[in-house]
Amino acid sequence: MDRDTSSRRPAAPAPPVARGTPTPPPAPAAAGARPVDIGYIDLLRGIVEDAAVGFAVLDTDLRYVYVNPHMARMTGLPAAAYLGRTQREVLPHIQRPDQVLLDVIRDGRPREAIVTGRTWVDSPYQVREWRCVYHRLVDSTGKVVGVAAVGLEISEPQQYVYELERAHRRLALLDAAASRIGTGTDVAGTCRELAEFVVPELADAAGVELSPPDTASARRAPTRLAAYATRPGLVTGLAALDARGELVGWPRGTGNRQNLAAGRIWQRNAITAAQWRSLIPRWPPARACLTARVHSVLLAPLVSDGRVLGILLLARAGDSGPFSNEDATVARELAARAARALDRAVRFEREHTMALELQRALLAEPGQLQQHAGVETTARYRPADDGSMIGGDWYDVLALPDGRTMLVIGDVMGHGVDAAVAMSHYRSTLRALALAGLSPRRILQHADRMVADSGFERVATCFLALGDSDVATLTYASAGHLPPVWLSPQGEIQLVPVPVGPPLGSGLGRYEQRVTPERGGVLLLYTDGLVERRGEDIDLGLARLTGLSLCPTDPLDKILDTVLAQLATGSEDDIALLAARAVRS
Image (tube, rainbow, N blue to C red; front, top):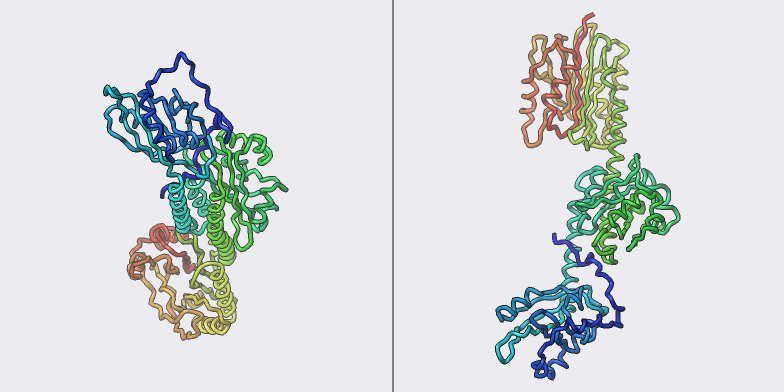
């Protein structure tokens, strides 16, 4: 994308004369002036005196020997101020095509050039431009005496072109923001994308400051810097943070804080050292801004649904131009678009934290799953590799009053808080039915009907087993869940054949159960994140699982760690694992 630099054109130094009332520069000393034969000028004077174009004649040293009245009016200097002087001396803010003129003098071939810059008179155009044509001048003896320059101002049509280009760049910038800001779901990443997006397109340095959580007004507390970016070689006060990572607060009661609290743009150009001290009470950051020659600041509030989420801070330094009203308009629109992405990230992060806390509260820690009525157990829960989504995977172990032990592994459809809440609901329902003394198939059947009748919309797969150490049997049933794995005492790994019924919550539950003798070894229950991969048949994942080399006499913790180390990499879903082994008394 082309960078819009027209609004950041370096400010030209003040001219040596007052605008509108120009006075000529001091005339050169008589001893240094070069006598010029200007006889040929009289022949042209009648033509060029009243011309509506700039006309000038320069000698071979590129010193003016004549300018017409139109050029004098156009530049704001009387014609006498030019004589015997170079363009550098009389028009220092105009780009000098000296080499073009020298080439014309050298070979006599006319040339054109576009000349840009500022003169000593006010202009409605952001940039003044002239299309100039240069011709070599030769006297009657064939001697080269100089060059004639004719300049037609094209500022007005060119200004229109510039405005169209700027409008195009603004639209392109805003369009690009939609695809480059908010690509992820984390707050820090969204802030970083925003700060890096506006540098150097709109500012030399940028920062994204966030309001404290659950703070809807910028008046209530200072913001903290979440991300910043600077153009190469620029060090600003944005990086001058205290140990807590908190940006120096914008003073309460000042116009900028009030504007931000109301959701308005705050802008200031040409900031002096004294103003920096008042804007940022802590002097070291202000001094850092001065050291980096930061002279202009624009603050745009990040507002979504009436809530001030934070601030987009833009700064310009050095030779960059001040912020214009056009810049403020672009910054306002960018901030509005970025605020929506940031709000989504904030909500997701809050929900993600809540879901994770709820899930951790409901899942027993591995150390708590040890031995229940002759059954040794341990478990693991591992979020997806990116950690962005918390699902409804769960495991549970419950010692029943009749001496049996219930083992459960389940997976609720979906992610987030709703899935975690659904998981809690299923877990509690299964526990209550198991405590009532029901068999596995009856537990699943009643749970399916209860959930369906309650209008709960999230279905779940589940495998449930009841171990009875008194008779050394294991009774199990499945509600659409993957079959468990049995690691035999001889080290063989086999899938346990299970009659599969519909998922819980469908209301269609008809479940079968199997009873097998307790044969020793280790029973491993898992959720689909362990074996499923996108674009791959599930049988390949199950084959990897049954192809593992595991020692049945190893501690259960070691067995689960080995399984995760070899199979969990690249998983796009959560993984829950539960291992159980009968303990001989």
